Image (cartoon, rainbow, N blue to C red):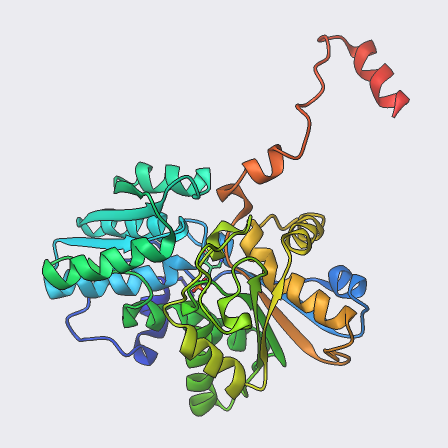
Length: 351
Ligand SMILES: *Cc1c(COP(=O)(O)O)cnc(C)c1O
């Protein structure tokens, strides 16, 4: 069966207006990759899959939300869309706005956006504006500007973003035949965990697919939902989740609780170690994307999570290509050799 995008595949499960337009780049339908070796490294005895959302058209799960949010904005007669972004939302909004023929404006926190994301937003033709402040400052600004001007807000405060993003839960259930026992994922502005919970609940009502426990994972330096209050100056190398005041924080906590799951934090070192472990399985993700699995590993190691005999799915939210510097910075420049075979042989034999 030819794939026409998630609007087409899941239209009947989406709570969107009849005037919504189909604006698609064939997002969704991402691979659910078995990770037996990684599960073994974490102690074994359970099944582990990675939902690799980096395989979406602009390299992150944001495309699932954007296809629906931009299609709604276009159908409503909007001429321009705006978002605050740590990077991936910007690139995604820019691409889908371009596809829809809409103007895109994106606000990013100064100097804290990974190169591949900034380049994406620019390449797709968005007007990119840096704010001398945090993501949270930028979000407050775009919310206010959309109250005063006819510009559509496409951050995950926009309910249609969640309508699109919940389809990832449908896909996991479709692939496994039912919901996994645990779902682990990174949490930043908390729209995605909220959307997954919506999706799992809806599919369970229709198809009796069951419900997972949710393990939401924040970065230790940006963990408002773990410490129970906003973080004024969030800090983490995982820039996609460098958020101190999550817009959907209440709903995320509720989802974690309703699912008998939990919200935890991991250090940047744990995140980078998991990024490396995933790359050794051939899956290169950006740092934030490794947080969910880093949290799973930490919980198992600490004896707080017994996954024996269970099925665990982890969402890897964005592609490693988005943030190449985090890797290249840590490696010396590649060795330079004369273009001579004996030089190559000598080097290879010496190592
Ligand atoms: C947006 C994003 C997140 C966080 O998702 P929220 O819905 O803001 O919680 C995590 N990882 C990546 C790669 C992202 O782009």
